Picture 1 (cartoon, rainbow, N blue to C red):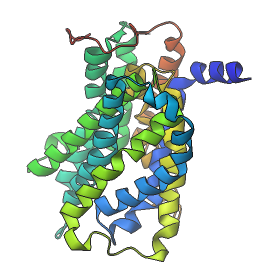
Picture 2: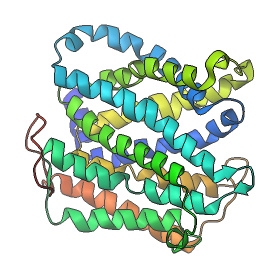
Picture 3: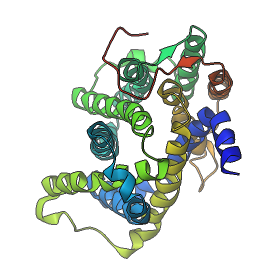
Picture 4: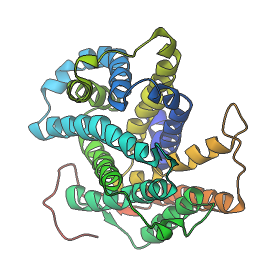
Length: 334
């Protein structure tokens, strides 16, 4: 049974990464309300703490395997916790905040943030080549490019030329987004590397557990003596919503699928997140925001889905060559 399940996961792994990324978008139901009461650091700290509590039994059961890990694997797990889990989430949240200033929504800043977010797969592909030695065959590139085009059409459906009409880019917001996407892209590569010796539940658990001290420091520096103020019992449903679906379930599925997926394919499949996010916005209120889907969005969604499904099919034909289980010495890009 376990072998059958493993084969099924391996066969559909790239699509499962996309499904996990799409589950992250359900965060939009729960986080906005909390941001009106708490800082980004306070929200992420409680989210991380609750997920860590759920995963502590897994860590304890697998304590023996953790003791046998090499320094490189430990460094990878620590980097995932500090960068993608802790710092990147706070940076991106702060960047979005610049788009909603005291004078109202700043569309130039919002377009800048989304445009820079689309660079994440670019960084992911570069890191996969440099640090994991993954080589992509020629057939990979047209589908990777079409996936990016599909997401671009989804994100900028109202005006595909909007990013190129930005007149007053926000330097700080841009730097924050770039920092976040670089960390998230690196997290995909480091996760793939760690999963060669660490099971997916343990990788998930260590991601959240090791991030706790970093998040605590971030909150203390940001809020000082008011670090633990502002919390209330009424926030519990929202926190549970964040923890259960986009947090615990999505990350477990993500690392399960990533353990069978080359990082080059996973970083493209993660574009399922913006696809799901904009589909959620189109749902009628109160489930969504009632934003009608435009033909350009539907075209972009179709292009993205076809690209990811095709890459998943081509995975069995070694469209991405993975050389081995060790980080390689940086060399020329693919």
